[in-house]
Image (tube, rainbow, N blue to C red):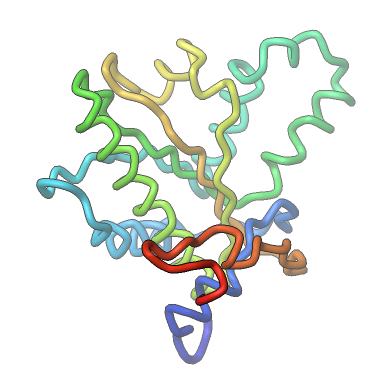
Length: 195
């Protein structure tokens, strides 16, 4: 854990999605603390449109068994060796949180809820980074598998929008380039030369 907290700016700029976790377990209490703090994300009408299924510690090992069973259907056709290669991207993290939102029939509310939950996820990622814990937001196809949803207790009228992996890492990935500001921002009423 960092001796001194990162500034908000430093956390935003330095955070990276981690793909190569080192397999060290993540304390479930750390995750609970991050989720509690991340809940301060803005959300319209204070609906708090999210819930989570967290697998850490021994439960994470059980989750991996469920993933082998209900993950990508073609995995069942793979040899044990090829299956283990596919599973490697899931065995490195030390924990996972599934972010579940209501699928409101009203489009405006559904979009607001998705946006709020996305901000919650970003808050969580920044809080984790400050603790030296990496994250990766994944949206694999098996999140919609009815048997997988049932195993996680996802109800009709709910959607899993993220499989958020948590874990420790040995190397920070290099930053990817971002588009320059002048390519993504126009100022209303100004000529481009004025910027």
